[in-house]
Image 1 (cartoon, each protein chain N blue to C red):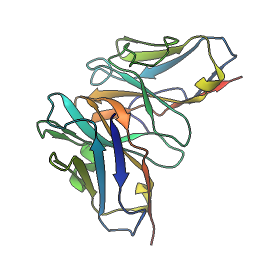
Image 2 (cartoon, each protein chain N blue to C red):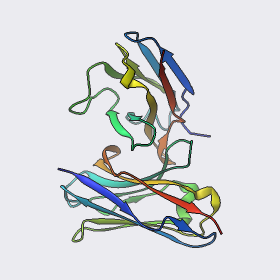
Image 3 (cartoon, rainbow over the protein chains, first blue to last red):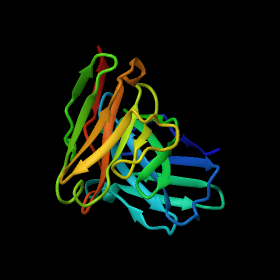
Length: 118
Length: 109
């Protein structure tokens, strides 16, 4: 059974750095062709791609956000960590981690709502 | 606004067929495969269609996907009340990497 769960702060202040952890079970991030992604969704808005790390440590980001994002994997701990710097109120969203082959994200965590406010 | 363009809403009576479009460009939809996700409000998205037209195990065959050039389509036949949800297309862009549509809210009349 494959599960993923996001954890991290529910409230951050503007300009702070957000660190989210995705803890997973039921698969290995060492298996060829698989990856874990972070996706976010502001309240009432669409999904937005943030980052993806593949089994071979190849990492992808959307260019407009690349300078603020870092994704890392710890295969031994079954975790993927996302850091996002210089948080702003517009970054208020539900943050999801998801797993699948390449860009086919078949398994998702429940999501974690992060609010940015002073 | 989203890189992939979807109509904001679609509707149909129970049993009818609804089709949702996803318009992109030569750098995303045309050059990569398209996936579709279903999201019931308050829950995480669910993979509905991958590689343009493939259904994961457990997805009813009422859902089908197709692609032609820079556009992709999701069809729901035999519409049921439980199909009320938001639907998102997703693709891979040569420059932007992962891209999503703006979502389509499906209402069963």
